[in-house]
Length: 326
Ligand SMILES: Nc1nc2c(ncn2[C@@H]2O[C@H](COP(=O)(O)OP(=O)(O)OP(=O)(O)O)[C@@H](O)[C@H]2O)c(=O)[nH]1
Ligand SMILES: [Mg+2]
Image (tube, rainbow, N blue to C red; front, side):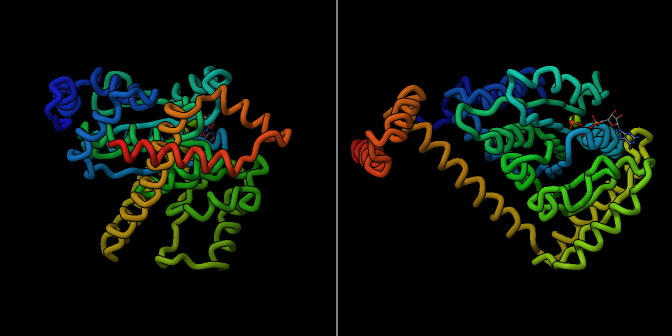
């Protein structure tokens, strides 16, 4: 039977598309927990996706990302957009619970069904936070949310991967706090389509701006886009309209230059590799060994009782056997 013939899945898809918030929440949970039904659901949702604009917002802890997302959300709601907001917490679900509570408290739109807010803190047993976030965005896209805002702390590769999946990436810097441009991870600086200097009510905003400009003068982007710098005071809503304008400016540039197709293809190249890695890893972990064996193998290899290269060959051979049986 084709997946669409599964009445449970198609009913679920219908409810998600009609705006049922509970069906939506259940779908994102299924995706987040990597439950078996998530795969069929995502397949059934995919034909309904591709319309949402995805805006990634990243920056150091406490830079004001949530406050800014909150202001942007207000701005876009006035323009009658329907929003999905995903706040990604890279800390472990065990240590980060309280912090996550703080992170989303900033978002003050309870009761507005035009804004769906979700925080995601759990990663799969072995990484995959970027894939999970992208799948959650797929669900929201299919649900008809035309603007997705993704907030993530710009600390690690996982988080860089998350914003890389966005159509537009906003990098938020702040004056002071030793948060100089030089100390920001190079990877984060390179992915900025728009720079925000938030907390511009504080001293040092000009200096941060000069530093960004100096860095920009050293290298040109392949697409020749020169990322604008927007100063904001998120707590007062200052600069929000300018930020929305800068975001739209980049989207316009991408469209005018005909870069959208390439950008989307690059996105899917990254995402396919991620999906493939996930699927293969899951299959190996399910069919050949679990986490306990992984620990044991690691110990044996560390003590030179086992050859890691031979082990991988065995694993691959096992996979080929599975394939030939199908
Ligand atoms: N002075 C000043 N304070 C701000 C500004 N924007 C945010 N803040 C404050 O900075 C603190 C952190 O703001 P958040 O929006 O939670 O920052 P965040 O980047 O989302 O924080 P994490 O998600 O924990 O990394 C809060 O106390 C805000 O009120 C601003 O423009 N000026
Ligand atoms: Mg936050």
